[in-house]
Amino acid sequence: MSETEERKVSKMWIPFWVDKWLFGSTRIELAPDERSVWLDLLAIASKNDGYIRANATTPYPESQLAGLLVIEVELLKRTIEKCIKYNKISLTKEGTYFVDNWDKYQLSKRHQRRLKNKIKENKIKDNSIEEYRRVKESSQTATVSSKAAIKEFFAYYCSALKSKGWIKRDLQLNHTRRRVIEQRLKDGYTLADLKACVDAFVADDWDRRGEFIELSYVIGLVRGVNMADKWLNKGEKPKKPRNPLAEA
Image (cartoon, rainbow, N blue to C red):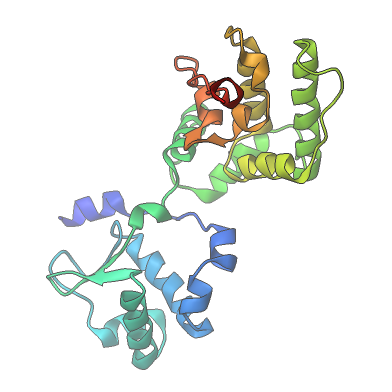
């Protein structure tokens, strides 16, 4: 890869998934000082599409890499050894390092698409976290708390079901339903996205739709199918679920 090509794949920032960092395996596998080095290695890898190297065929000397990170060589070696042990990085045939599962440290295609559209609409510079934050804030008239968003969406969902005559009174916002909504919001779906799922769901012309009104069929995961994406995709409707009572 040429120097020009390397500059093209260099990133100004990478997503930092809070839950994975706080509750994932890294906190168990690496000591506190090693975790800080691991973040530094991710930052270096983001400059070269997952590779940690001086160039395509030349690895960093340990002393140079340790100097770049302002740490002792012993700490660098210890961290790299553990990262290889726990399949976080691998050694290439050229003697350089590559971050395993590098694609998991990128934004999902859905988030990339949203960011690209915002950048195009607002003529902002790509990969700028500050610009992205400004666009995100300007696109929302107010910040809605997670709890308020959950309640607002569930009320909207119940109202839609009642309008179809599928229920006579509001369902209970129990723990399971709350977790489904909360997870969808964490996954990056907006309140408007979830409401659009409800609109598409109640507009479906399947004559047995009213038999399958549980929230999971609207925005959840059913047998590995992301129902939220299915309902948001106007050109493709979800497969009609089996009625277990009819098969009994």
